[in-house]
Length: 282
Image (cartoon, rainbow, N blue to C red; front, side):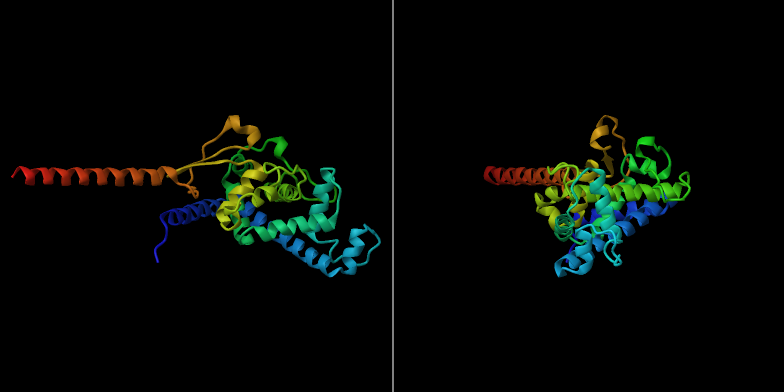
């Protein structure tokens, strides 16, 4: 069984990019933090969904927002707390039954969740302007995540900043899933995924769709290099990132192959016609 050339190149690309991430302590820390936190939050949603389906006492207490509960099993789940925080921050009505069901629909729609999470983390770690922020090359104040009131960590510590930044990005992802920023396919990653059949079966396509819809990163790929554009709000200041990122439609590479094969076919046809004429003349 042979491997498709695009899949082979994509695999090499992922290895090269992961090597770049692992060779930098800041990028490595961001990658590990984002993957672990995102997986934990999605697992919390699965637990909460099971509790809702079973109509447990814990869920009923949370649903009616009774604060004097002695059962913190679900109320203290990081995923549920993140969901409530994101919705309240964007002035959305909190309906845990509806919102958790919506998140679970998204989780069940993406293929191989853990692989998609790692792919998303890889794209963010190497995308502009996130890479510069993570490595400390350029950290604008507008991108700096604030510390919570009960957080006593040093806000100037680069690893603390990376932890807060990863949490901020995950909250934006959850908010997009729950339609906190709108219900169109440009603001709701759930709507965009429902509209993309290929992304529902290919983890690489799903990851790119998520990165594009939630954070506005566009990918314009050329064999041997990749242009990762800044978010849509900053498209005027696009920066070039020297990395390999082979997408599902390597049209430039495949186009060259098809043109070469066509030329070869034309030359062979011409030679055959010449031989036929020579035989007739003889």
